[in-house]
Length: 428
Image: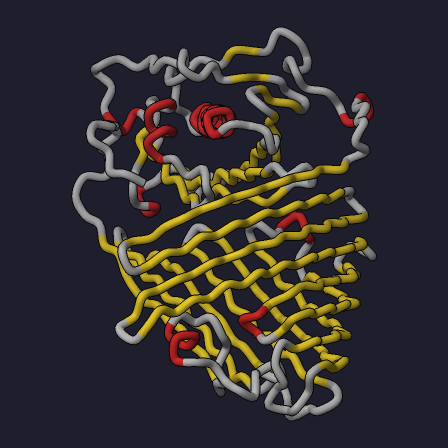
């Protein structure tokens, strides 16, 4: 089952709201901690404000271990066409003898403040927990207040929308910064413009940006200066061809001096197959992507292949799997690119990772990636100076790159502490 929420109300067959801030616990002091359901919140999104949810929803036990929870809540999110976010909350009961599974969703507007999004997410979370508590036999924990009308104030159905922008969304950004000390100075300017339109069948986006950096560092043997301007324009057109198939056209152009590119333009027809339905992408996805890219390069300096400009074609294949389940999450993928004019020029990459809850309180996290690099046709014949190499301002030849992280966390002690204390919080 699935219910969805919008703003601070709920929409669907049943319109009910939990009055946040006025929701009161209605249990007696004689009730033990076990008279309330144990809730484990599994969230890795930007709005994972655990303290806020514990403060607003104080009629459950927030536990820190999935294995002692009565209900496991998995929160995931994905972008919407308007630039907001759709949050999906899966409520999974842990009692194998009485299976429970329910899903709620909430869509935020791109203009919503952090507080508005947090309030609405807490509202949606509270409703889902109240439904679980009611079905699981918990009584007297919370009061549900029915909406006065069949549809909450401020909500409209899709056929009532009169959109003067015809689903188009625009965004403009700008930024300027300066930092320095007695021997170091850096000035940066950034600007960006984006527009996009999303429908169930078509998705189109175009964005462009420009940046300028002026760097000056005093060294023991003089002063190093680097002034560079970069720009880029990217576009993407995607069509939902069938239930599991999509086709797209991806274009890009720009100036990238770190890659010895005074100008680059590329166009890529692409096709994607999804093993699972696309609406399950936040919990699990398994996709195959293939494309052919035609590109034109105008180089800042002559390359190691003695080219100052060239047109080349490249094929690409990517396989990717992501899964998020109560036991944790896992992902892996591989991608390969190969130039068609010379098949000895290629790049192959692998990446994988997992976050697994092994036993009570113990989680293991591991991730890694490795690439075999044979496609650096853009490298300057003159190479990078020592200063450019140290500051990573210019790409240098390499046969591979890699990275790996492994870690664990173990927590023990009280799992029932619902107390929130916000005094002297650390700076974020």
